[in-house]
Length: 135
Image (cartoon, rainbow, N blue to C red; front, side, top):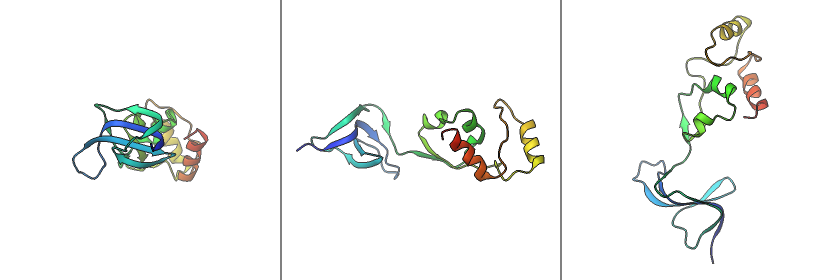
């Protein structure tokens, strides 16, 4: 009997993050979980993607993220997502909180291409602000 999955990524070059050599195979997904990797026998997906000649990898963690401001500009985080980044670790070099009034003024005055009002005081307020923007 054929296995049924929500999503089946077929014939991609799979980099599993372990450091081992990549293998060509399939990745089967149900909901938000990877449930099979390799060559599932008689597998079918509600949605199937032909990944022949493409790399398939787990999401990347950006350990030195400068996405603080770019997430305000583009809350969909397309620049990171299109590079496979699924987790941003922020706070390197500067932080979006806690901020006092002087720090808020300096942050506003030192903005580059991305302009925004500093509507938060704590890091939690900043994260809530991002959530309100759909992140």
